[in-house]
Amino acid sequence: MTLSIANVTFDCENAAALAGFWAELLEQRVDEGANEFFATVGRESGHKPLLMFIKVPDKTPGKNVVHLDLASTEWREQIDRAVALGAKHIGDFDEYGGNWATLADPEGNLFDIGKA
Image (cartoon, rainbow, N blue to C red):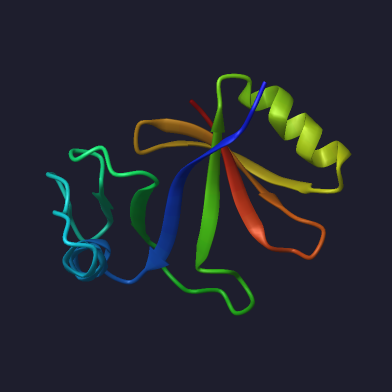
């Protein structure tokens, strides 16, 4: 039962535009289907970790806009383990074709644990 870094996620105003910047910088391509709301870099090329860009309505002050997305086949057990270690379970989500939970570490930094 291990965790791996699945994605590095950027909260942003325009997902496709920011993905374009990072794709150029890393000499990669923006994955097909990118739009202003959601984009990825690395899915088609197999680049790891995947860079994911998600439009958020308002960058909340104090919220980290880049966070780790962790993945495990035993993701629910890993969520419980993280909480036992001191994380706070913020919420569960089922969007963009994936399932994950958002948590905060003991200092309030957000991270996600998703279903691998």
